[in-house]
Amino acid sequence: MNAALREGRDGAHDAARHDALLVVAAFDLDGTLTRRDTLKPFLVRAFGWRRVAWTFLLLAPCALRVAVGRARVDDFKVRAIRRLFAGEDPARLRAVGLAHAQAVRERIRPAALARIEWHRAQGHRLVLASAAIDLYVEPLARSLAFDHVACTRLALVAGAVGERYDGTLAGEDCTGAGKVRLIEAVLGPLAGCELHAYGDSQGDHELLAAARHPHWRPFR
Image (tube, rainbow, N blue to C red):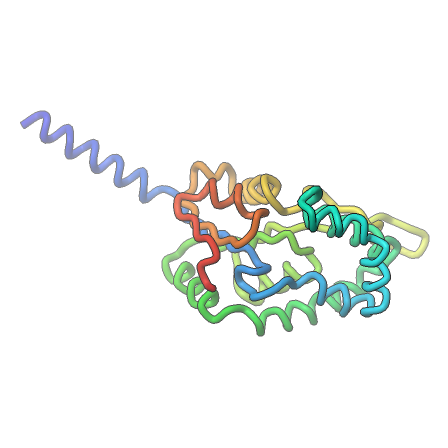
C-alpha cells in the first residue's frame, strides 16, 4: 500500500512538473513560413535591382565559396549588408521594411498560419526566429501576433546628421547556434521549455536539436 501511494505521489509530481514547463513554438521564416527567401526581395525594394545586382557581382568570389561549400550563405549575407547599408537612413529603411513585411505576410503558407493559430489556441508562447533582418521581421511578427522575435539586427551609429546604419550587425547573426542563444536571451534556457521548433535549413539544425518536438520542413 505504501509503495502504491508513493508511486501515485511520484506520478503526480512528474505530471505537475510537466504542466509547469513553458511550452514554446519557435518558427523559422524563410523557407518555413514562406516558400522562398525574403531578404533579396527586401534589398531590391530598398536599394533597387541595379545596385543589388552590382553588389552581388562584387561579391561573386564569396558566392562561389558558398556554392562549393567553403562558406556559409550567411557569410554572403553579412558582406552584402556591409556594402548596402553603410551610411543609410534608418527612417527610410524602416518604412521600406514595414511595406515589405505586409507583402511577406500575404505570402505565408496557409498550413503555417493554421499551425501558428493552433499553438496560440493552446496558450503556447510564439517566437519568430529568423536570420532575416529586423527591419521587416519585427513588423511581420507584430502582424502575426507573435510573442517574441529573435532575428538578425542591424547596428546604428550616431553621426552629424543623426543615426545611420554602419553596415555591421548589432549582436549575433540569428542562425545556427546563434539562433538558439538569441531565443534563450528572451526565454531563458531552452532545456526548461517544452519546445516545438519549425525549420527548413542548415541554420535551423541546432534549434531543432534543442527541441522536444522538432519539425523539419513541415509545411511543404
